Image (cartoon, rainbow, N blue to C red; front, side, top):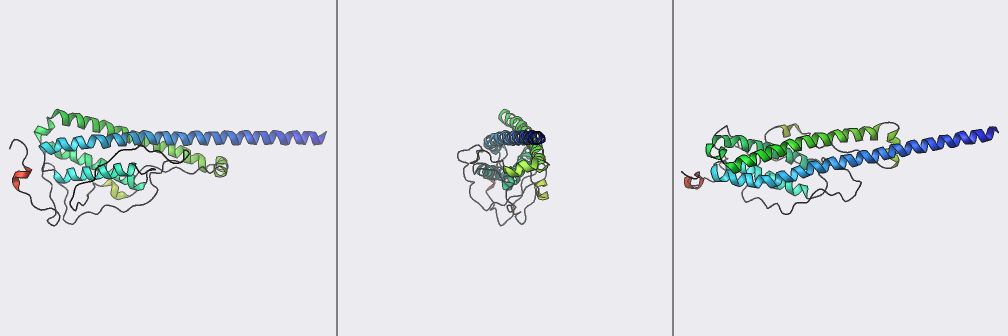
Length: 259
């Protein structure tokens, strides 16, 4: 009789442990899917920004050709970010480039305040409104993604869920943020000449492994070098360029329309 009771108790314990492990496993899977879905929402808004920026650049060119350096910054960073987005899982380099692109677009919007005709242009105003709304959605989506990463990583590291996570190889997710303090500053990119390569066809983030987590910071990449002699433009002033990198252009090539 005692043996039967012991067996029954052991069976109950085994069943309870199995049910607990199953519940923890299902919770980890659910949270991992939330992390993946929240990243895709960020990726959609990033791709939308890639589509808006060329139109903004073309509009600004027609009214503010003197802002060549700022326009080149935006175009170069946009093409670089778009190329990184088509290579699979995001990494630290993409996080840094996206941060630089955000700052470059902001610098462009601020610099064109010196051009009243451009500020009154309907197309520019609409593009500015769309970009502002997109930037807000990107910031909100990134906060939501990082919050889900925090919750998921807490489960992966906490006891007893970490036991199940280790058994079934649940890896920690990576935050989408630029950790380098230099990314907090306005970007300065060196251009040695030539036109930026076209973006090509865009692809949404599709991991090869359906259970793979987004990895915005997988590897450290070198920073863009600041060209010697480069200075950030002041409000309402034309961009200044190093003598060794930019050849002087005839004045008539940089006159705004109507002059």
